[in-house]
Length: 103
Image (cartoon, rainbow, N blue to C red; front, side, top):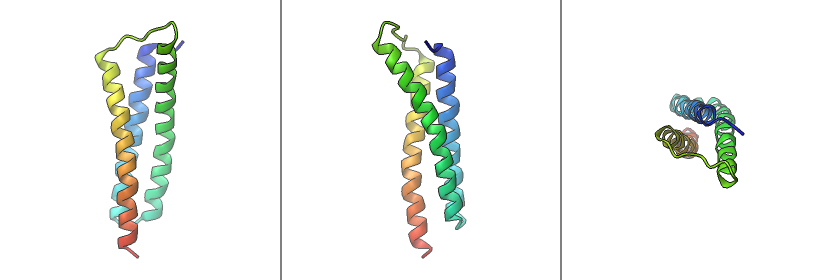
């Protein structure tokens, strides 16, 4: 069983890193470095997977006997994860637009 505080921090840290890499990718695309931007998105994906994996573990624990308390920090972690996933999706679209514009 994963400790709640440890799990929440892992979600926040990994989701935050993913989001930061997405914005770094957008800056690269804006500067015309499309391949670097795509590489940064792939790197962001790795952090996103780690955050999502921890979220899944918490959901599995919650579905069993070890009910998880709903705390403000848990809500905060979920917010970080969802924001980073949205940033990833939007970054992909914006980078594609930059790519088309530069052709």
